[in-house]
Length: 467
Image (cartoon, rainbow, N blue to C red; front, side, top):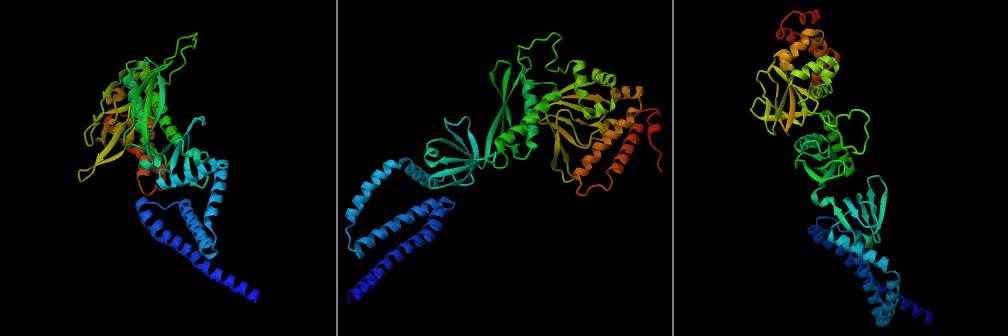
């Protein structure tokens, strides 16, 4: 009889306990479907963090267990709460840092200032430098941030809540970056700005670096070896890391400086036992103009040093302001230009009258050579994007060099044909069957055009006979 009574008592307790547990499960399910996935998700516009849902579910289960103890087993929960309060106070004091981590993690998930997948920078006095990476997750006690070198930083949530954090995701991953170059004091400020701005704009063709907003160049504080120039630009840090974007910009800056004959400032305590080498080229100096011309692909491969010097002596130095047009599509032309500093935009006018951008001309590039060599009209309009310094070589100046060595014509036609064939191949959807054949045909067409433009029969003798 006693065993049967105990069995019925246990069975009764189980039946009384099940509604409480079922009710807790029901409340958790209702919160999941109608609150977390419904109201909160629509307001926050992103999934509710798992740590928050788990915390609320634990609170519901604790309330259910307290109800079972009080109403099913007829136990006074006041004493239990009091005892648990003392135990909780002791444990809270012992585990205060861990508790801080947990509640900070809940707070971070609630306010949504940092979410999984965001690219952030961590700033703290204990770091030698800011730590940049992508948030992998925000857990109960720690958060994990994956750096660009593929290492993972594990940061306690309590520490993360007290440090300054830059979240790039809040600006659609578009942020302004900057780098610095120091140039000698004797270089005019406007020239340095023009060259550096040309490099920054040239870098805007790289993936992840934006042309809008446009980059700009500021003059920084004077430094020991020269004037500091701050180059600011905008990039998408979710596509490339800040260091990769700075690398791309710096590569273009150094290229523009090299073509223009500039170099970053050197320590002034250098001792020279010979004549000091030039640290900056001057466009009004014939030798310096020859140095710039010798760095162009066309002249470097076709002309000798004395011939480049002759062109440098007669070439005109032209300065153009931003927005100024150098050549216009369809007009007659009898000169070519060598871009010495700055960046130029190239665009064509379509049949419907619209303007289509087709590319950029950087320092060290040549344009207008087809008009000079063959007399063809300008094929595009070229406009200065920044301040530009360019050398203009007229047909008469080039003819003077050509008369001394007519064989130049063949080499010039070959170099120009290679460039035209490469441009046509890049612009065409279908790759030419034989690029060498196309180069040969273009070279012959250029020679035929030169024979009509330049007097005499010396160039005509260079044209291969047609089969």
